[in-house]
Length: 409
Ligand code: ASP
Ligand code: MG
Picture 1: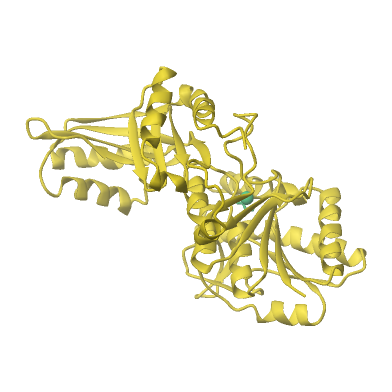
Picture 2: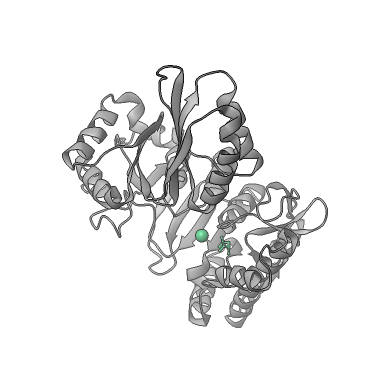
């Protein structure tokens, strides 16, 4: 008898029919003899609706109250799912994040999990019940209700799987797994049977929308194997596993596992920044103090004691970024600031890159052949990213997917 954690996202529990279908699956798993802990997201677009509602009564909703409001979404799904499971003849008990023992820090709206004290879940399982937990939430060290940031139910599921030493963490969603590219952009994209934690981290960070980034970090740090699969077809999906596991099996490791893209960022350039110690420190400290999430940063070689600095930020942070940088311009003696919101990032990710030279060159040649201009480049050991015009992003993804032969298995 094993213990499995099954997480169902918003589309998987969007309406009563879906909730009944999920209940059937949970009941079938239970009747095969496994203990089941279920984690649910809020139904459909509930969280978005609640956020909108908050902004109708307040221009800047208080963070503590925002958390109190948003956790209601997951409470609705957990109670309804329990009712549906009980209706099908199996005992089930629901738990809020707090009741499930998810202890967090006090950072409202993006709290970090500090500990999982899952005694009540263990008791429910020992009594023969299915335990259904509200995702995305916990209780802080100050006893306030917190949320883990958008998409946080994935993190709840992985954290519970780690704490309960589950044999697997199944993340059910509306796609059948992790693909070599977004199938809406590249119809011949293939589902990957397996992907390593490191590759999944890079994919999640560069636009792969299947798993929340924090949940992948958590899975890697705690060695939780994650199975991403569909609650619409129920077919086997993609396993996210430790890097060694792929190597040990000696699988024919593809050089590139996937192409990701992201059009949610804007590019900011500061012109003629004096080339002396402390300038970048001052600039990026000011941005950090204002909680701007700076991503790619590129600084040019200097000519005549001056250089340009470009970086990307989420669209949502652009206005704040411009205000902060403008306030710094005089102090650091830079000439001015320009920005471009119509950019996108295209990335290739693959563990095989480490031992195969020429991958970046192939990427640049592919973009060149398409007449696509590269505005910024950044790399990690297993990723190469290029910032290009937003209008070129889809064409770049299609061309790269073809250039690296990702459509054929
Ligand atoms: N309901 C929350 C959100 O929409 C958490 C989740 O679905 O993972 O972000
Ligand atoms: Mg999600």
